[in-house]
Image (cartoon, rainbow, N blue to C red):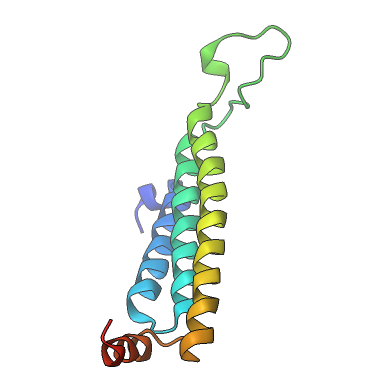
Length: 124
């Protein structure tokens, strides 16, 4: 392991999380497991953005004690992107889960291959 990996361990962990989620999304047949894989991918992305936005020795961009020097604060944009992404992710997850419940009620399975075969039999 090189020195860059040890200093950038947060980025490495975020890449590992993204790869685990992506592999789960591609390889699983169960729809619930696919949704979990997508959420793991989201978490890896948010961790990466949070790691990139953090600068050691700096504080949140809230002006306190009259310090207005730009170099005293971190960049607030990655934090805002992470918060916005989390809100969108929760909404998308809720929509995917509700559609999964509807599919289960109709086809009595969560296996994507079986659902696709039944759709072909129905002629849709």
